[in-house]
Length: 351
Image (cartoon, rainbow, N blue to C red; front, side, top):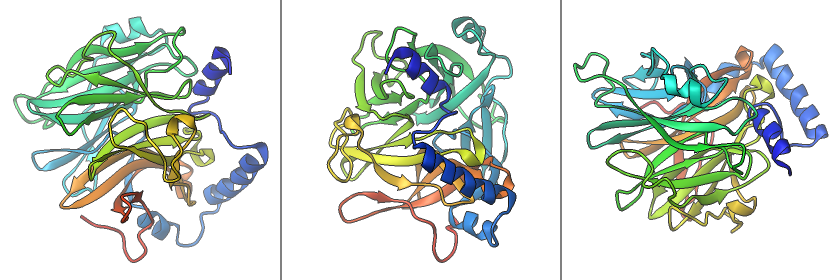
């Protein structure tokens, strides 16, 4: 595939599908019906899939500060939501009320609408990573903002922009968007990222600053597919699990996003799926797919809550014209150590 073709594919990132024409046509018929004529019991189906009634797209990993849980998402200045019980969510402050000037200068066409943030709690506060890009181009940058607290009433509350962490240009074969920050078993900090082009990449960060350890530090390749993005790495039971999205997002009820997974003994890979296929060679075990009116789940993150792992993601609500919303579902680990995320059969999980 040429660079131009990859650029078109990534721009349709949120605008194209990897399925054949017949499958796409069938899916359009199905999801259009879900949108215009929601089936009886649609709300019950959504509840089984962990629906939270708040508008969220590309959610970060959920983090806790004091008594509140927080999630950040795509939007002007980076959108935030807060909750005390993981059930009811309310609007929080935006990270940036004034767009950092360097971002608009560095990425022409971007005007402060930042994509797919991710956040991690550190010893001295929080590191929040965000994407600066435009559709269809891999001139992209992942930036970093820090804060001592997420509580806007705390005197120490102040988001400080720390500038660029990693970037890509038209000459690169990757795209630096969709950051996902992870700490390994030795306390080292890592950043996964990538969308379309040559797939998902990984770099090591300086745990004290949140920046890349060196400008020319190794870039590890983790996964590749025709349409892949939204990586997330989670450590469980002595292994690392790489979650990725296949398909197209941002088409509302026509979105084809689905969540895939592979695992590795080391954070840098190789990541193999349940059948032993390397994710770098197109492997990826299906974890979560559309179940109308729950459509196009994406941007997985895991929060450990009172002994239960909870996976957050966005989806497109077919009962509400494809509005993006937050879902939170329990993760079950089978005897072989593989995660499963299934609709809650009896009653919705309530923290």
